Amino acid sequence: MHSDPTLHRVSAGHRAPLLLAAAAVAALAVVVAIATTRRDAGAAAGAAAQPAAAVPTPVRQLELLHAERFRVDQPFRHLWRAERPLVASGWLLVLAGDAAAMVPRQTLEPVLYVGAETAERINTGQGSGRLVVLVPGDFWLEDAPIFYGAPALPEELRQRQIDAELARARAAGAVAPTAERAAQVAAPARSYATDYELRQRAIDLVEQHAPDEKDLIAGWRVPLVR
Figure 1 (cartoon, rainbow, N blue to C red):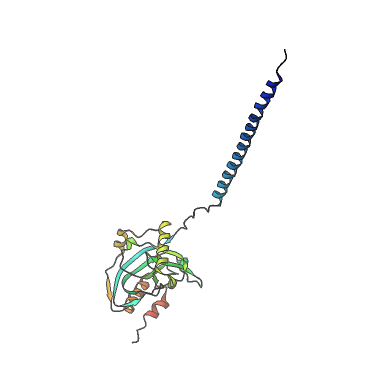
Figure 2 (cartoon, helix red, strand yellow):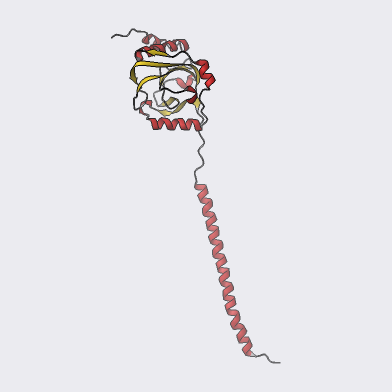
């Protein structure tokens, strides 16, 4: 029995489009696979390019040993920050810390903060590890971590920079003295005519807590010439 050659021609004519369609599907699959691979590789590269989360530097804090509020009749300038605000009240504090960290250096040194304010150091504390500081402002000690910030010149710092240092310190775990500790070390508040009398009181505290700083103490004991 002979087959009809017309049927062979029709069958071949139907197979050609099917083969072309299959080839197109296969090509599309390759394109999709390549695009997916590139997308995944790009995502991985982007993730690798992201900077690692910064790890907060451990904050160095000082212990509160003594605290007394002060007030002066004649306000004075706080020279340990850029704005040099007038000071009418604040705190005299005695702090304890690492004596080696208190050795004066001829380079930028870590700034000492009490809450959102720079502290004026009355003495060096390098031998005793005891530091007497003057801190302007009316605030609660239990709201004010006492810590070293980044090395800088205090007289160049403005409030936004001080606030940023406080935020970094809190993020790194800095804590303020407890209310119980503040009450335990508190002395009666005192009033003075000027900051000269205030600083004489500060030197009394230096003599009590850092008596080895004899030259500083003797220098402040010289009578004021008016």
